[in-house]
Length: 111
Length: 114
Image: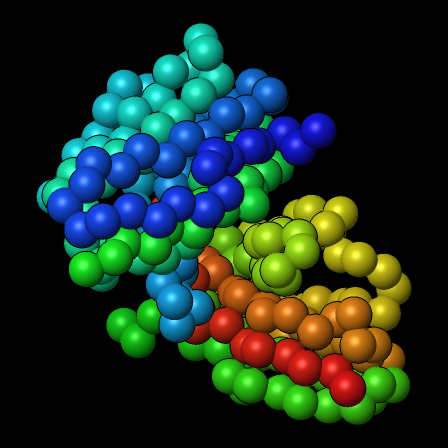
């Protein structure tokens, strides 16, 4: 079993829909990272979380440390949100602890 | 700053050839990471450096892979000899002060080994 699991693997939705992408992990972590990979391949950091919730524009990320779960939400989705969203965790509390990646969720927003 | 710079952007080579990928991190960043991305395995951390010293190379698949960071502004990932299964996109990223401060990714090198 992977230490970081994302769901769904693929998601197609209509423009304007509310999107939720989930990330569950089985190891103790000190931080969680959401990344966005555009269709052209470039990778951009979206959020880094260790607790609670963060919001940036139409994107909201939450984390529940006790339940070992994080969600990434997109409100009023738009075709330009189409990308692969990757969850990554730092397994531990030390600066040099291991980083573990999920396999990504491929999101396609239809106009 | 120009961001993380990788070269070449695309590389096509034949099995058995040596391949060298290059990365220039963002100035002032003291952590540098090499990742590999494939359809089957997703994004994988191969190795990372702190202050030019390799810290964790447990992700390096086998002895055919080697990485160096001779100074704070340059790193190489070498594959010798290359094999078709090495075909992937290789990303370099850098961050400041911590493995888990925000990482800035380069554009990647798409490697095809025929």
